[in-house]
Image 1 (cartoon, rainbow, N blue to C red):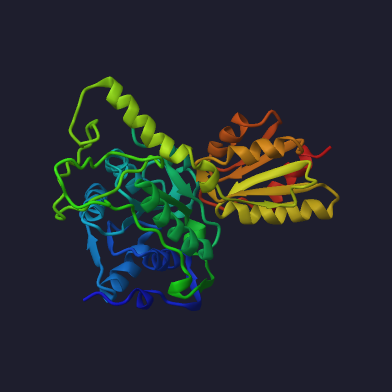
Image 2: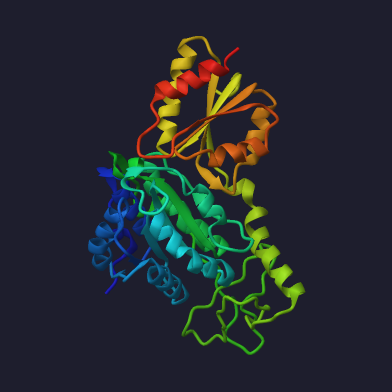
Length: 385
């Protein structure tokens, strides 16, 4: 029998690594189902939930692969569970087909991708940030993803909760794009009492089952109410283009309307979703943009630049998708140059270049090692007047 919600939350201060904090964040958000396949460097999330979920009446299933894992997550969500999986680059790739199915069927769920060096098997135990564009474009078709990038174990906890809340609010798969360094570092994590943790539940039908109910009819928020399997509602769940009844159709006009709604329900609230941290940007001539573990090195470099009389500031991206283009455009009005720091070959740097008329310097590495603050400082000094 499931225990009370308060008992699922380990309140107080703890020293834990990012993967463990992520698992505890999922439980605090109300997660009751996990399906996954062990893969470095996300395995500790599965290990933690394999022990913790049965303690609170939840369900943990180790699947045969990531394709099945994602399918199980979607099915559990339609049965009424808050569901998630955790993986790394190769598994994230295998999940993409069913992530697209989740987008089309508007199935709330969370996928945590602890990034490692790629392509292919790559560097299983070493850090990377090269899945940013896979999260955006990995599944075919047009859609707007939501993705968070934690920079600490504390944010692994906090942003996992936000990912669940966004998934429930928008009825869509949501990503936590972590990386190996943040996942495996151990720091203090403060977990508030259960009553202080804000959680969101999906919109539910306001009327009892009837023949006229339309499972994909959306109101002003563009998000339909979600009935669960077995509740008596007539629902049809398909990856095919469907009308408001959920029935397949080949009508191009219906397809265009559907895909535009799936995208607009996120686009229209991008300003609410986008989170970032600005550090010393008010007078900055050079703004360093970084995210995840790399932001920790970038912050030290900006501090060192200030000590040398260089007016450097930092924009730390917390939400990667929707991309916070508004703040980049705002900083363009004051900054003379941008420096983008990331463990890939320029995936976010290209995105920054789309939204600024200022020069953009790249500090990149394909993965496997942290970018040292000295490398970032050198780029700042080269960009300084």
